[in-house]
Image (cartoon, rainbow, N blue to C red; front, side):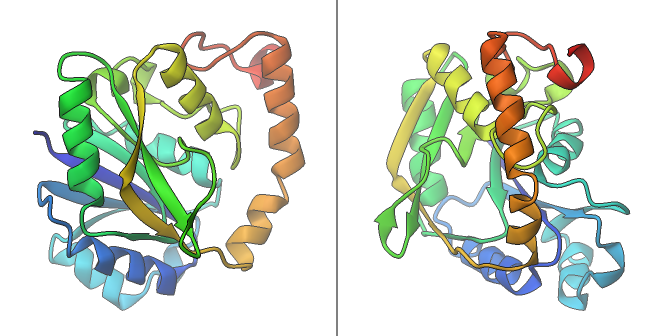
Length: 227
């Protein structure tokens, strides 16, 4: 078994984030820590989150300017030098066995090799979304990437998880765990609108990368720097 680092990017969804963190308290797997990347909203951090940090319940990484989720993941993964890693968002409610089921499958299927376990996300009780949107990644997989930058920095909000999932499947180190469940609470708020504002841009980057035959983790070329 291994320590699991859960990284959560957030901007201003404090109510959703609090619900998400509360759901982690009831996990049957206890060897984990929570790392919240506050993406460009330092003046608005609520007191309850500061108290959680002071008590050692969560680690806070705070940045002045908003750069969105891919950059937020990158800022944390550069510092993550031990344990496994699970990428998450502030609108997930974890079922009690989510971590234990994903850790079990990781140790069973990838005991000595790179491994990625896809998490089953439910919306209104139904499995929705890509199998690799949220994943548990083991140490060998994390260290495969220079500076541990797992999510391709060509993107702002979308498509980085897609490339990560395609890579893991290409390397034959991916397993989708239906019993590792989160409820994904979809809301139309400021965070949603900010994400949608870059949707076309990210999809275009994805198209260009595909046309060039680039897959982050197999190659480490960036379209923004090479086009």
